[in-house]
Image (tube, rainbow, N blue to C red; front, top):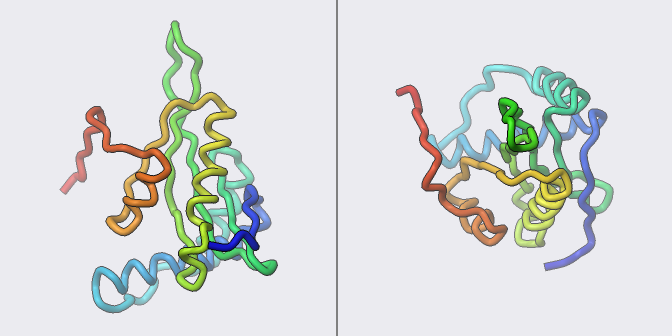
Length: 159
């Protein structure tokens, strides 16, 4: 594992590279599941606009890992507002998603560093819960970062 990279919070101006990496991530995921990529249903430019708007709006945050001046990994955090309560602060729950490191950069510590930056932010904000729907491949990384199965969460996949 090397440390010749840095992790920083993403800005709306990072949207083009984040959209491109999102498409690479989903193409890799599609190949893993179906044996080959399908034709995209939307353009990478649409994803770029979506990401730019969300990062500028502040309810979505992202962190990127850079090596050699190139963004090669990212993780997103969506801040989910909670209904106000009379006895607790209204601190959001964090939804961790779109976690990806380019295949050529894996096993260098990027994933752990990205999760560490996201968790440091969440702790600083006083958040007490982060949720994620991990891929089978990412479960060990999340477990090493302290994520555990929940006995409280229920899911309805609407199938």
